[in-house]
Image (cartoon, rainbow, N blue to C red; front, side, top):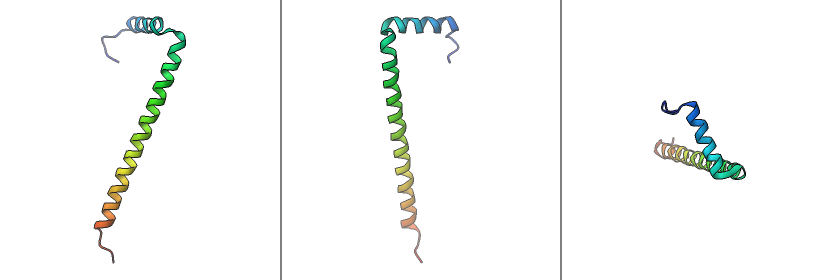
Amino acid sequence: MPSWISGWELVLILVVILVLFGAKKIPEFMQGIGKGLKEFKKATTDIESEIKNSTKDDKDKKSPKA
C-alpha cells in the first residue's frame, strides 16, 4: 500500500464509497469483479497452455526421427 495513505484516510475512502454506491450495490460490484478476474485467469492459463503446446509441437517437428 502506498505510504501516503494512512489508516484514517483509508477508512474515509471506504465510507465515501459506501455512501456513493450504497450497501446493496457493493456486493454486486464485487461479484462482477470476481467473475472478471476468474475469466482473465482462465484466459491467461489457456494462452499459456497454447504457447507450451505450440513450442512442444515445434520441437517435435525439428527433432530428427529415427
